Image 1 (cartoon, rainbow, N blue to C red):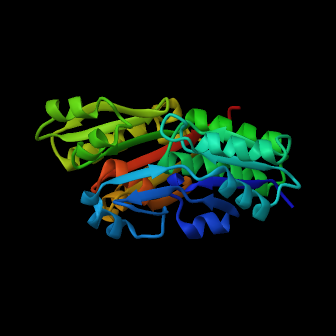
Image 2: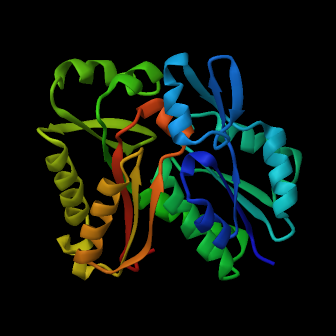
Length: 284
């Protein structure tokens, strides 16, 4: 037995990767028009086809976390890793569930991030659990990765971010960036504007260049390992192209191409492409 690892669907982990790593995913909720459903009940294409009906999202309930924890097992401990608390009340729901069960055995970590960056934190925790590390050490690994992970993305426009209310400055960005390719970095629990690019291709170039510059010693070849997630919302070719460029530049230890989950795309709209990563240089 090992420490159980759970996360929410905002982590955008492909199902086969989550299953192979023994990660339990607790789905968030989508409300489209007057209908509520779990994240994943509809495909991304189906969700986007109904986007004009009005879409909102909400956290899993404490009861849903309790049920998932009971199914996963907490005998060796369990770690629940959630989307940033600034974006959702998911961490609060998980804390309520942990308190109702056994707070000594069930720990909750707000990763401070989302999407593929959250997914990379979860995968690092799952790898530590698979090695047989105790709960405190698994949590320490997750905290270390959460402090190092990056997420940069470009989107077709800022309309959905502005409407979502999750990024208050998005409406102002939209006015300033008319005709340009918006870019943002997710850090400190929220999306922060970067200088826009003049084209989609230049935006992807800048994402790759930011990954390059972040390498320890300023050179990918000097880093011990790179862990990368290429993300997209109905733009798989662009995401795969980014990952190909990363693979050509260095050896990648952990990687996946993942579609943003519908609960995330509800706030960004289609056309998003991003890269999440962290470098492991062997330091604690």
